[in-house]
Amino acid sequence: MREYVRGMDGSGDIRVIVIGAGMSGILSAVKLRERGITDVVIYEKADRLGGTWRENTYPGIACDVPSHAYCYSFALNPNWSQHFAPGDEIQAYFEGVAREFEVDGLIRFGQEIVRAEWADGAWTVETSDGATDRAQILIGATGVLHHPSYPDIPGLDSFAGASFHSARWDHSVELEGKRVGVIGTGSTAVQITSALIDVVDRFSLFQRTAQWVLPVPNPGYTDEERAAYTADPDGLRILHDDLGQRMTNLVATALIDSESPAMARIEEQCRENLSQVVDPELRMKLSPDYRAACKRLIMSPDFYEKVQSPNLDLVTAGLERIEPTGVRTSDGVLHEIDVLVLATGFQVDRFLRPMEVVGVNGQTLDEAWTPRPLAYLAISVPGFPNLFMLNGPNGPVGNFSLIEIAERQFEYIAQLIDEVRAGRCEGLAPNAGATEAYEQSRVEAAKQTIWMTGCRSWYLDDRGIPATWPWTFDRFRDEMAAPKLEAFDRF
Ligand code: N01
Image 1 (cartoon, rainbow, N blue to C red):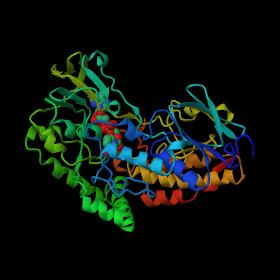
Image 2 (image 1 turned 90 degrees about the vertical axis):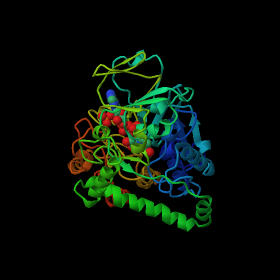
Image 3 (image 1 turned 30 degrees about the horizontal axis):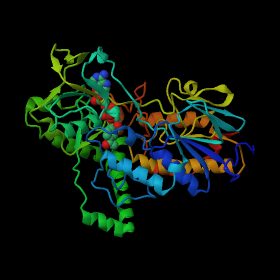
Image 4 (image 1 turned 135 degrees about the vertical axis):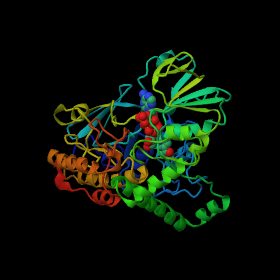
């Protein structure tokens, strides 16, 4: 094994570079150290950890996975304030975990990796300020919903008031008593609507496609409940596991079988929820023409109540252009607003990019991912040895808790790292045949899922195929239990 890469911290062990200090990057560092790998560095382009929860600070932000399920299995939290925790509490949770497990000291903040190249049995990475580093293992923990997607609407730059993407919220802009326009009606816009409707003077919600909304109440936990969870760690673990199991039984299995009784129940609940909208015209505007859960289900305790507020205009006419004073729709109406929020989602096919990643024989990830990203089991790419991704391409993004996914993916990756660490090879990358066979069966299975039943959504790739895990949780768990080493080329 090459001396240069091994033991830069004096441990004589393998060295690992993690890209990104969000949920999966923190997890990677904790788990690597748990396995005795101490030479770990996390590169983080921002000045704070937290990923999604650092970037998204819009009013009303909360996680729509139950709090007691949305936490690391090794760091359960008895103190969540609500069944669905607000974003700042989740951010504080990740900061707390990083401190408790002494991961914060491994993070190089403000250092963006712009290039990574595999040569001579290791990855050399380069940061935007020209520094380089080298490690045998490179873990991509860069997230899925990270790069904002801006709408291509004429005149966007001409708007005279404040305008920003929901993931770039400008907290210096005063909203009280203002006329606010929000483009989009995804999970983000729905949370913003609920949070702002009682604050602003007028709220224009620009809806291109109606959404199905599942009613999900969000009660707080009492002090007594929090004290009971603190006093009973076993009970807390049972709660965590039960919630995960319930999500799998109620939602995840329904998604992959569009004709299942579980999916029929979800559809029924969504319909019933919509029926509380009293005005038939408004109800009609809010009625989707596709099946529930085809687009990602919106979970909200109160969207239909808020959308009936007298100061809300639900605008369904097409967006013709943005003008200095507002949004002009295709029916000729100018909707005058003071603040314009683009809750228009994310570019979901970026993953590690725009970083330039160069693998074996000089092939770049951009080339390997033309026309679209592809990864064996969502984790690794042929020709890119020892590059492992958490929540990578075509993984279970809409199915289970992203934290549980990352934990299981990490256990799989750790076993590949063990091969390198034991000196049985310098590198591992999936072979092209196994990757192709996996992808073909994934695409076939994806066609049976609810995501393919006739709607536009961020789950669909450029061919209209759901870019997700199309099988059960049990299959995911079994696949992640142990890598099939015969599917890998050794370097
Ligand atoms: O983004 P989206 P999001 N003109 O892509 C509309 C997660 N999340 O930020 O439906 C007009 O879902 C677009 O319209 P249409 C969750 O996984 C989780 O809301 O394409 N409209 C749509 O209404 C979620 O799914 C939580 O016709 C345009 C909206 O913008 C994911 O993040 C909270 C347009 C985009 O919706 C993304 O959610 C929030 C245009 N040119 C988010 N372009 C949790 O609680 C786009 N739209 C965990």
